[in-house]
Length: 484
Image (cartoon, rainbow, N blue to C red; front, side, top):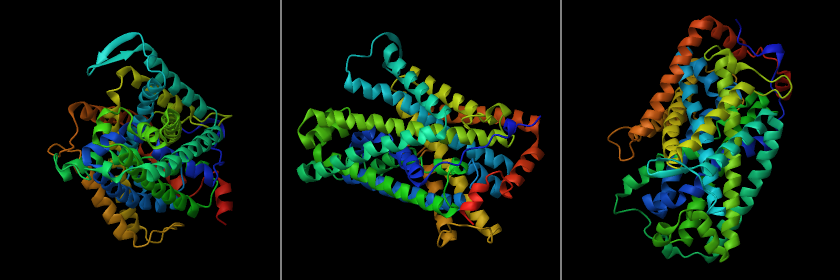
């Protein structure tokens, strides 16, 4: 039994440069900065939090360089899956891709919890109907309904085609940028540098505070890797794919640093302690008007939409790639004959996202950290693939070639290992039992599916599919035309 998409259906290569940039940048900025900025400043101090994002951003930038080269050299759907398969083979490629899928699923689930949380700030008394209590938080029926409804809406947008999803992404990302520029400009003119004290959290330990923030950085920056996932839907020369990827990462680093800076200028430690959403409160303080805070909340909702949208795209394509190669059941490798989207993979993403609101607001922290582990594991695999392919296949065509690639690759590997170490027992930022349970449970579930698929389709089938893909024997002649 073949698990190839039926009827010769192919992806549509329709994403232009602005589509791709909005997809990656919108995915990385998301909603997390609205919810978590105040906590970052309290944990590490104002300058400490900025330092954490600059350090973490540098690590992500190094990893991003490896992605940029590999994405331009192997522009096939699946991204990490294709690179790690070529460099390290069948099993490692599955582990790598399944780990990044955890990151994607955790983001779409995170947004399903974030949406009812932000709506609560616009309509404080809307959450009614007691259901149950989880980790001391009362789950309300209307609260769950908003999260599930939003997830199903985003699922429908992605189901009907990547062109629709890309248009939504561009419009909403533009709104976030406009509001963000207003906030940063206003805080610089009206803020007070004294409010930034303490610059570092000396009481809890400077290094410990910074590390507490750094472990969240991979989750905040996940998004640039959506570009390789959708490579077969991008209508750009291969070299440009790498360039757009790098620009998106650099923009995101500046975004987070300036948001933290602007918030710390407007809210002193006492105000931060009293604030449930620090950035909207800082925006209101900058413009001395309630409308400004509400506008920032709307920008937060826009951020939910951008990351939700992008990770539906990235996660569904990664699931599709594994299934197409025989590492997951063929059910996930179906493309819609009209919309040319991996429909069953999108439906599964929607189901998982819709479950999250039933766990209430405590799920936010669990998803951030557990998803972050999966992301960093995937980054390590991609960095290793980059180094191995530079050594084994130095003459492989690389339209976007990283300068001093071996040095960049080695640093990327080392930094990824160090990032993984931050999650381990003994670290000040080690995972809790709940977070480990999510990560380990996800990986074990994946191994069950992988084992069944390997017995059902065989390694030889995967090898045949990947030989065709890696040899460039694909039906996407438009890409060749763009690079000729």
